[in-house]
Image 1 (cartoon, helix red, strand yellow):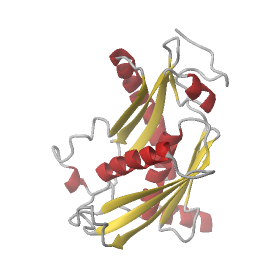
Image 2 (cartoon, helix red, strand yellow):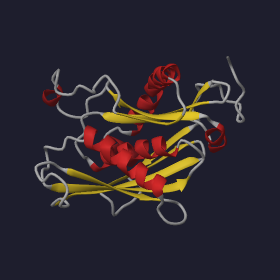
Image 3 (cartoon, one colour):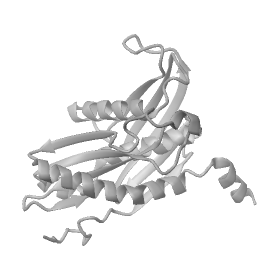
Image 4 (cartoon, helix red, strand yellow):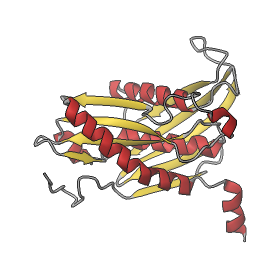
Amino acid sequence: MEMDRPDGRSPNQLRPLACSRSVLHRAHGSATWAQGETKVLAAVYGPKAGTKKNENPEKASIEIIWKPNTGHIGQADREHEMILKKTFESICIRTIYPNTTTSIVVQVVHDDGALLPCAINAACAALVDAGIPLRHLAVAICCSVTDNNCIILDPSKQEEEKAKAFAYLVFPNTTVSVVPEKSLQAGSDPMAHGIITSVTHGAMSVDDYLHCLERGRATTQRLSEFLRKNMEPKSTREASKAG
């Protein structure tokens, strides 16, 4: 069953994507990521020596600092921090800089729906910009279920508020290895072909969830290509700018 969306998109259509890297000079890496009117700025600082006392000093620790665009940090922001932390702990190669902390500051610029996936995409771009070693890139998408059981991708705020359920899904971008092949041997990472993070809200049936997974996975190809295009090594980009 097809449905008309307020902005005229088809159910599977993403909003226009935009990404810029190295936007902050003082950070080790930074990026902005926008999906339609939703925009997030991510900055990476580190790795810095030492870990907080509840972290494992034998691994690199990841700290997330979420900054809402207005007001104080709330319960939902804390949940976002936790999801980001778990997601990036699973894709960063944390054995390379043991007993260090890498901080990712996520600044919400504007929230017009699918904010958390947008933040994950921004943070991933900023980690690449900072040269932090990653097992693979992550691409995140929001799929929502409308009250008449249509599944739509990348909902706007208006669509999100009307949705009866939604899923935030993070997939590995497996077509590119950001790290030397050695560390990617078979069996080293059970998630390479699966899903990194999955968070659902609302009343979602198993069927709906499986549909979301299928639709989300199909779309990550486009997100991956966009992310990769923006992740070309800085040196070649700088050379082309200079030339």
